[in-house]
Image: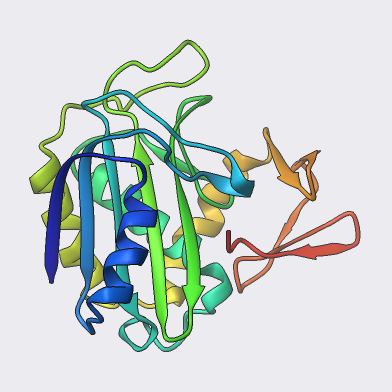
Amino acid sequence: MKIIRLNKVDSTHSYLKEYIKDNPSDEITCVVADMQTKGIGSRGNSWTGKEGNLFFSFSMCKDMLPEDLPLQTSSIYFSFILKTVLKNFSSNIWLKWPNDFYIDDKKVGGTITNLNKNMIFCGIGLNLIEVSDEFGKLDIHIDKDELLQSYFSHLEKQISWKQIFSDFKIEFQKSRKFQATIENEKIPLKNAILNSDGSINLNNKKVFSLR
């Protein structure tokens, strides 16, 4: 795999897409920055943090993913693997459906995933230091390089969606205390039904996790 390190960028996600357009590659390519000024969040929101937090995006061919992974749930897949890696480093981080990282009841990061032909792009932001009272930060000190090395090592193992889902469906119970924004409306997840493809049934609608 290839890692591109930047001091400052508007968005690792946008930078990576332009880079891949000019430099097509079948290997995993990652862009990591010390600071981003116009990070892309879910639903078109921004995710701009302070210098010292973790900002990275990566791309990979869809055929590098496990065969049983529904592409529309890849956001959960990528997020849960990072959560698992951080757990191995003794963090109490957990994943709120579908792609938000939490410590207790405060959001500390999130994931955004896009498809483009045969490529999948994933961007992740994680607060390692204080940002504001509204958001939390990771509960452990972590070396960024060590974390990325461990994360991509896990990703390359092509862990099956079945294995990831068996753990995620247990953790999903924590999400029931929260809300999700669906079609620009905040809806409680208390009565949501989690499907085996990572989607949920809520208010007679099936909602997928890809965003």
